[in-house]
Every structure is written in structure tokens, then in C-alpha cells.
Image (cartoon, rainbow, N blue to C red; front, side, top):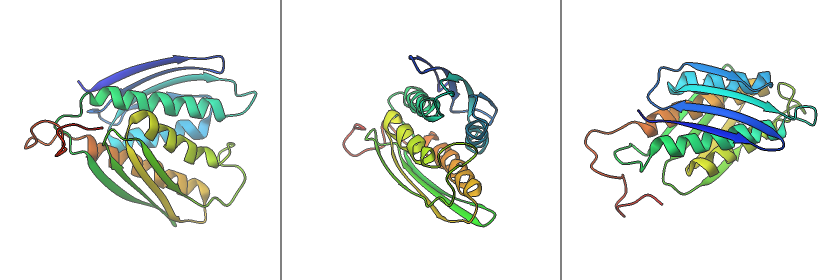
Length: 195
């Protein structure tokens, strides 16, 4: 079973997260932020990951710490569940339309964290949170998941649709990149290691 459980407790948040890579898209998510719950549920459903997230954070301050720490835990769980990454496909991408919006995510599970996120938001609030937290969430997953992630909302009038397209594309790209290729012997790198 390629799975991992991460528990993170700080002075700002308390997170319990379990990720099963070879799942069925079942999600049980409760972060206290309805928009984040929705996005993580979409991510799990479209990536066919089984995901449990239970988070309590200092929402009386704002959503930043809860979003950030959930992303840290998701990235760490992904990294742990992949193990030494032997046999995986490694790279994949996904385009996802959501009504008038189009999202794109490309992934390389190289072991080298890097993120390029491009999105133009039209409002100051997205589901009650700062829209820039979408960028921050994706960057944080890339850092702690040790992956190269490029994400772009090509266009869209509705910020919710743009974010939804990005989270669905993230799930689909990660699903494809984490698959085991039965033809692959060892790690998918001519260097003989991923780092």
C-alpha cells in the first residue's frame, strides 16, 4: 500500500492527514474552511486518491496557517507514500476545463522541488479566503512533496472555476505521474537516482 499518515501540531494548527495513492477517490475533509474542503475533495476525487484531512487552526486570525499547514502535510504524505519512487511514471500533465475557465498542471516527481504558478484573480476573496492562498498551497505542496509543479489558469471570468480547474488538474496529473509503469526497473532517471 502506497500510503502515509502525517500528524502536525503547532501553536497555530493541528492537522491529521492520511493519503492513499492507489485509492478510489474517497475524501473525508474537515478543515474549518469550506472552500479548502471543496478543493481537496475535488483533488482526491479526480486523482483517485483516498484522502482524510482533519484540521483545526487559528481561523480567528485568518485562513493562512490552516491552508499552509494542510499543504505541508499533503506534500509530506505524498513524498512518504512514494517511497524511493522506483517504477513510477514520474512526469504527467493535465488540462481541465471548468465552464469558461481552463486550468493546466504539469508534474515531475523528480525529487527537486520547484513551482511556477500563474493565475489572475478577479476578486479579493475566494470562498472567504485570499485567492493568493491557492498559489501558496500549490507551492507548498511542491516544496514538501519534492516535486516540480507548473500550474496555470489560462483564462476564466469566475475565480472559483479557475481554482477548481487547477485542483482537478493537480489531482489528475499526480494520478498519472504516480502510476507504476510495469516496464520500469528502478527509478525513472538516467542518473540512477531522483534528486
